[in-house]
Length: 495
Image 1 (tube, helix red, strand yellow):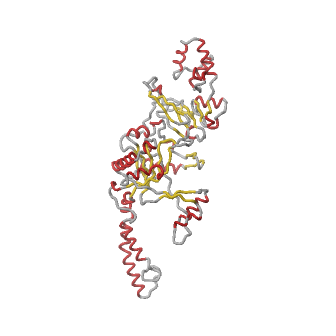
Image 2 (spheres, helix red, strand yellow; image 1 turned 180 degrees about the horizontal axis):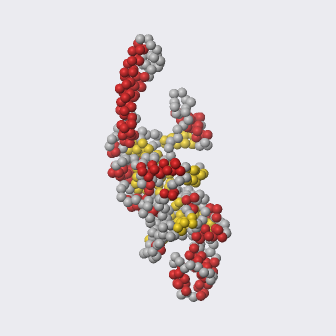
Image 3 (cartoon, rainbow, N blue to C red; image 1 turned 120 degrees about the horizontal axis):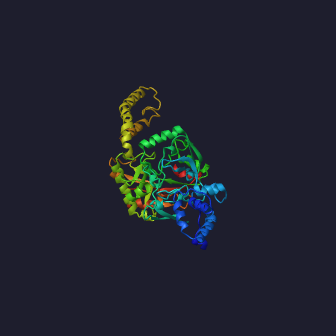
């Protein structure tokens, strides 16, 4: 109270202060959740001090809008539509939040997850419902990390968005509901729940508005992800699939960059970055600095400190030991390049290609395509011999025979078929992961971005993290980007 009176602090009321203020005004309240102890302690104070407390509590406003509208502070959270407004509904939400009307297995009200729907410009800082770790969600953050329950006392430095915490000396009050749940995601207070993905869902997105997910699609995705994907705690990102260009009008091409640039220009994109394509397999690499980071940030213990998975979320390798050894190589490369300190991060996410292509695809070739290659190898020579014999007798065989006027390409194609069966010539053969190399195209770090939602920062690989590749050429290959302008003049060099 003295700090507020002197102008050195601001204060917002919570449900506890609101109930105690009503008690001081002679209202009947239920002395639960520590209120009885507060009443007992205050009874030992003078009447003058209690009057001062009553006046102080009566003067508190429900929430503050600070820093030119960039920051909103309240006790229990506040949707954007209530920012800067005063009403009974606004004050109730700021003090108590909103519930679903249900109770959980501990007899506590189930809180409505308003922060999951929040898309406001202002950052909302709140508390009320304790969480094990303070973490940003849609530009909101809960700073109540359960100090009274033996957790931590957490503060936020603004505008740096830097968190500072101090561990509690002991458990001052035994919680009815444990701070940490055993379910995946329970380390940060948001355990996975089947209701989050079951049935028809409507997802609010930043750029595409509301996206509906039909129940059958959700069920199929749940089946695949639950059976085949990596641990969902180590699955922070799924890359989008590549969109093919329109069929090319350029003679001899199925696809051509001209159509891609034309589509970008039509969509209003004036400049694109063209990256070198390696003959590798798409891989997402999540590498933690150490096992403590994997436990503290992602809530996992044991196994590799990170994950290596395909664009569909499946483990890149079936053998976890191979995954661990590749992650060790990447971790060493990142450390030698000094990126942990440069990016001020404890974990790094790489959207990359893992080379060579045969490292992942050799088994696919053997199981699905080798039979086709063997069949063509057995049949095609006899077919060609029959066609050549017919052509020699004057029979018109069209373009199918190398002996005909238009059939010059059949025999070379046959030779290419043999080469394709043996393996692509554009990639080296590697059955041992030690000969593999990764080629990252971009990276995300836990360093906060200068954006409204404080999301992990995607950075261009060449400008920020290329030292990893230059320092460890045996483990990493650089992806060389080329800026290009969209429009007719940009396609000439591709011919």
